[in-house]
Image 1 (cartoon, rainbow, N blue to C red):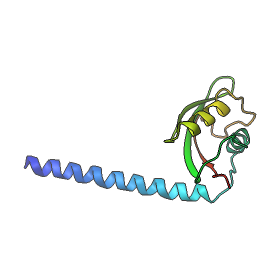
Image 2: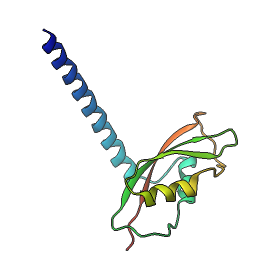
Image 3: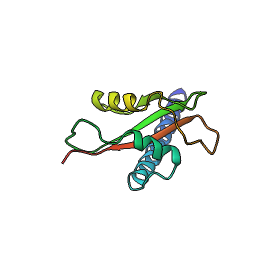
Length: 119
């Protein structure tokens, strides 16, 4: 009976992680094909234009940041395996003041960022 409970628990964890992974992939593909419509996203993109490095392939990363009391971005994490991309995004965004305001009053954000490969 104990092993049956453990098996049921493992099955529940497996199913819930698959549902989360499927949702994440769906939202990523939607984001990849759209232009930023949020004023905060547009402003973040403007800060990240013209990187001074070249990549072999396009990279999609997710940047988590919060806004402090002065409406400045504080980068919490960059979902990237590349230290180059990580430091580039942090250097360009950390403590940059945003002119845009959040409509929902939220102070925590996750924004997808596509870094295009050099031609």
